[in-house]
Image (cartoon, rainbow, N blue to C red):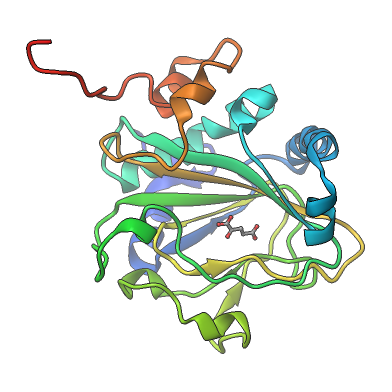
Length: 251
Ligand SMILES: O=C(O)CCC(=O)C(=O)O
């Protein structure tokens, strides 16, 4: 795998994730392409919204890989895939979950957490590279509109974040800000949280977790793959078509 990917240097990005636990990668796609993805998402948000969702002021859209071709394309974005192939030291990486998250105006919650599979791993968690999370910015992220919060260094803690952080913002926490089309890539154990949206406009992100092919994925990606129209070989790999499927010896 070459270390250059257009103007991005994959080796440098991976070195930063290895050292600090995260790296913000600007301009993975153009703002125009991010707008295209956001417009596709807005149609899904409108079609799937319920009264409960409107009251909660936050909406998750799952199954995006098969709901619009642009999301299958971004799932297999060459830069993102090569970052995770290098970081996880495995060309056969798969996607564990691929969804969108929108914080509407007035959303006002914190919920500090690491991502799956750490909820299921005995503590202290292994420090090795088990999985890598990608947060794509489909809107410009600001401190006001709910740029994701994250705690540098927390991927080395080996346990979940203190519950009290959902009431009082921890002093050293950072806020992900940046132009749409960029992405934050980080160690899956890093503590992070959605944040309040105090603007009049919705803020949307895509979240894609990548892992090595022998781990159990968070979502049933194969079931979703069956609904993807004309998937590329890479999309098929990422959604688990080529991974080992358990059978019965001799059977
Ligand atoms: O939308 C965000 O800012 C973060 C969402 C998140 O942390 C998650 O879905 O795990």
